[in-house]
Length: 418
Image (cartoon, rainbow, N blue to C red; front, side, top):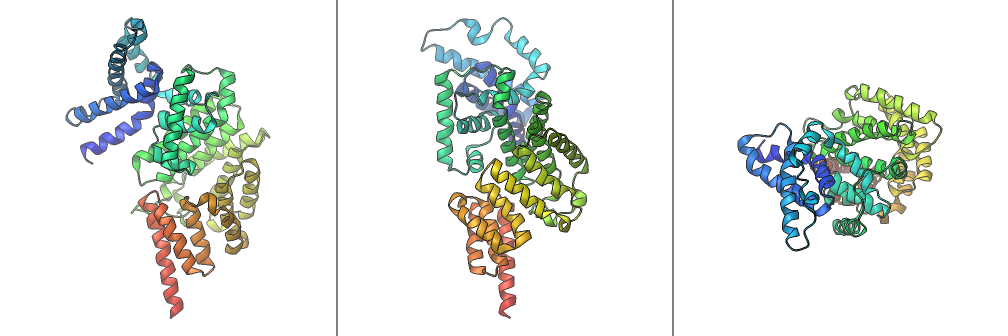
């Protein structure tokens, strides 16, 4: 790996905690982001020669804080100067900061700021987009894909959220217990979006895949805050169940291995057992929620020793429940897989075709549609769907997977011609 390569990974992994701490100190989104970027530039200049610091996050906070203070002072020359302690906390700023850093208090700023970004003064879509960008470090294209919108639309959404935060004077203090409870559902949604971005990257992008581990860490922290909340238990269970398949999802060349074809001996049974225990505990509360249903679906896959043992009928029923709890074209798309196993490709195709307008820019829609058309011996239509899926692929592994299906389609056509 090149010098720039390992530094890029280090900066990506450090970003959430470092930026979260800088935002807490400066109470200003733009200053915090600028301070972090300046710290990253300094790292690119010094780390290749001197090597990484013992604690990259602490290093970035120290350097970013100094840069941010310089920015505040430069801005202050153009306006009335506030009290010195407001700018630089000269009582013993560095010693006080060092004490907090040594106590590793900054490490959980990301979870704290997730709650802050869920302030009711912001619309829900802006809350999630802002948190994913500012707190968790997802790029605008990554967030746009998660919301199925264009990059320009997402950029505008984040910009409006920043402006609204600044205009409304949204406080950056920790919300109290009541406010945390009110914002819990949005925080869970953000954590799961973070997880999905890392899960989708899998073994293809190491720095992006780190988001999955970070989301699980946040899920554990959230469960400590809300130990009796069944949806919090189910969210962690869901992520653990999906992550348990990590070692089996890609082959040695980084190519995708479908769930039915995975070597189930590679699944992490420790994570599965922990997740199943959490799910059972959540269900005993008798307060059904969407994460419990999704975790129950993942649990059915995990309990099946072979792909042939999968209870597709129960999975179909659970997806129908999920459609009622959280109606979504993506939920229906996932249900179509179960329908194809139970009733055949034709019924599954009929189920997803009304979704085309909503999911035309969604890779998995065209991939599934192509697969169903191939099963129905409609190769020309399948080829068009697969071509569209390749154009929407987010990684080389996804594109390669669809190309393999195209090759199989061509091979089948050749065999039929003979």
